[in-house]
Length: 122
Image 1 (tube, one colour):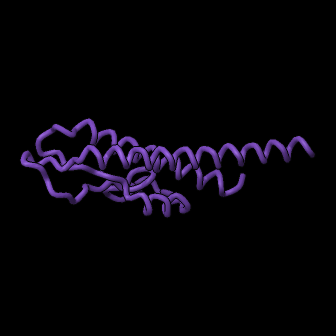
Image 2 (cartoon, one colour):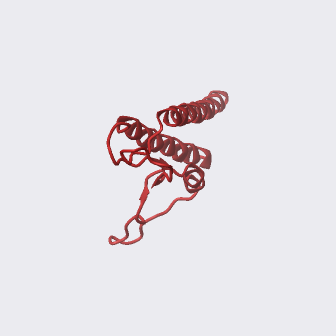
Image 3 (cartoon, one colour):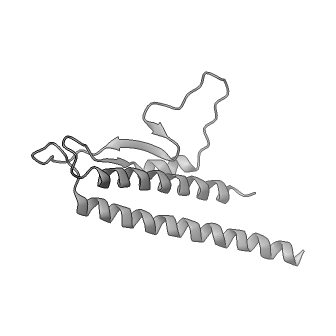
């Protein structure tokens, strides 16, 4: 298979990870002291094209890394209860992430259709 499938898989994983992080932020909008987090998306996309492999049993992922990218605490001005989640911002990020996920899914579907068409003609 081509590298496009691995790249798209990595992008879908990054989008899935980001969705979970944003959903966690929204779920904790009223939790005192909760600090919003986000996936460094550009870094995750760059990592999606590079496959890291463990060559020995003792190898571990770097601290703060998760499949699809790194999750980091957002540096924002906190509210009175030290919670810094802004619901409007989280909903906007969720929408942006959904559009990205849909685009990656569409590209993956189109690539599969191209392979199917090529196989039918041979």
